[in-house]
Figure 1: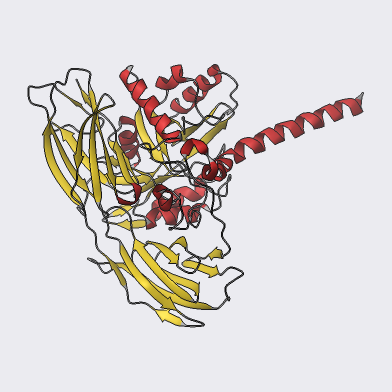
Figure 2 (figure 1 turned 180 degrees about the vertical axis):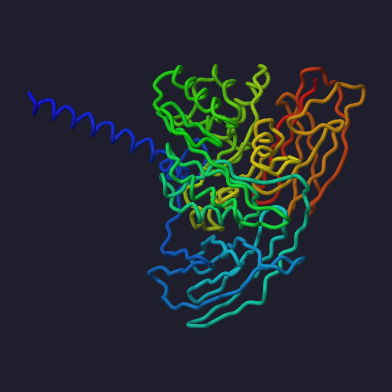
Length: 487
């Protein structure tokens, strides 16, 4: 009898362990599947022969089998053009022989070191949406050469008082991510973000390391704002417990369990309960739409998938948000990379891959820009929850309706004027204006323009309407805003 009970207990343990492992690994599976996900119209993954090792200040590329393994070293420093101080930055290296692009970041002193096979390269230097992008084209390196580049100066194009960018969905080695919290943190800062949330699956062990990021100075009198959290990973959807450090029962088999999870998050002080990638059609999606109003935010742009204006997971998520809004359920929309590796996957720029893939699953693609006059944990959380924000992988879209902006309510008047101010470090293409989720105006922007301003009178508005905007640019640049409400 004792042997029988022991055998049964062993079987139960194995089954529970297998289920837990499957849930924790499921988002990594999501990253793997994106290349062949017909729902998102993405092409087959290219075959890579080269290999790459990432270091603290750059990378080492070892060429493929048909190319000699000669190497050269390229070193340099990136600085802010105005202050002359080192700038933690992002680099993209296009190896023209392999036709692949790799991504890395500098160290905290803006220093980089690249060990490259013989060949010709384009090297791109950047620091997020607010800085210019510099590209060193057709740079040739040769065997055992040592190349010291002059300082690369990046100019700040736009000063955005009270606007702060951040990534709301990221993973580390504490669940199924490839990078330590410290590496995720540096990657966030390198792309110009001011805050970030690390959200490992059913784990808060990463929190202590992540919160140490609050000590790091990022310029303009501010430190990085590291926000704790975790991804509640169930077989009935995934949920973000933002600013939560308390693990609770993450088992969910019915709608009542989802209600319990929403309550468990929101009953903690100053937290946000979020629905993650709801448009997925597997058990990582969301089906309990009658409970959507129990949450604070909804992730309509998950970086693993195509932007919401294309087909697929994010488009489904966005369309469901519009439906909820028109039924009176107000949820703020957010975006996050769902990043399981800060350096993404090398891509072949001349292949048949869609343009949006070229932005890859790097940190901050997409990012959520929030407006708050209180740059603090409370201020940023409040802005996220109220929808004082827009989501972007590059372009910046600022707008107000008679002085009221995203997440705010405006009084209906005889003249309703929409003022917009668009900015980018790449060429803009088109602005679309929506009322209650329906397109009412399209504005084409002149070729090559990096900025665009205007005022448009919106007619036939009525009480209860809501307005939001979408902005597109070169290389699948895209931004979508939260709503401005009318009374």
